[in-house]
Amino acid sequence: NCYRISLMGVTCGEANIHPNMELAINPGQVYGNIDGEMTKDPAFGLDAVWVQESQREHAQALGYTVVDSSTVLATHLSQILTNNAAHLLGHEEVQNLLEMLGQSTPKLVDGFVPDQLPLGVVVKVMQNLLNEAIPLRDIRTIVQTLSEYSSKSQDPDILTAAVRIGLKRLICQDINGVEAELPVITLVPELEQILHKTMQSAGGESTGIEPGLAERLQQSLADATQQQEFKGEPAVLLTSGVLRSTLAKFVKNTIPTLRVLSYQEVPDEKQIRIVNAVGH
Image (tube, rainbow, N blue to C red):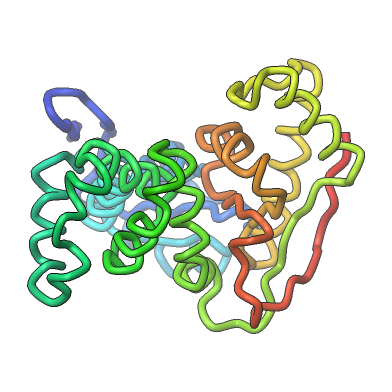
């Protein structure tokens, strides 16, 4: 009853599954224990219990999320594809996307590659977006922004930052839909200043943060994220454009549900509500 998911010859996930049982997942707050085989939800690593179908209603009454085995597998596969989307996007796929865009907006695409930007740079920018779970739905805005900024820089990271600002409505909509308010976690000014100085001394290229500070910051952000999830609200860290990329890399693997935005990536019509200010 074991399955393994591989991409390009590399195992990305595996788990044991019980076809005739259901998985009761602890979303973070339940009101009692339930008998069964203890395990972890393979997609998100949450505590879970394999239970009999007859225990479904009892488990739900205690606050568990109960799904069948096929849903467990499908969710795990979907999560792996999402997490590895950047690795699955290559030159050929991006070229196909540009050709499709060219059918509706030929003037925008004509001469874009290679006259304005090499295809490799465009691929890297799109991979950067996928790495932070930003869908490539609005290819037109992506290409338009890259075209506008290509004369200023050919650096994929700088171009990605520009594209993210161009996609700010899409990014925020994916986080909390059409809600008027965006709940955010911020860093206290003193901590932002420390992180700014760290980046300046490292030439702005290092993602390294002093180990002691990194540990405290990671724990504080994890706690703030958990508080948001308990309230059923998205976890968003709002910071300066200079720090955004560094902090996004810092939390990517340890706090994957925390989205990191810069102030410039919040649309004017979206009201910011600060729910937590993290210090050092």
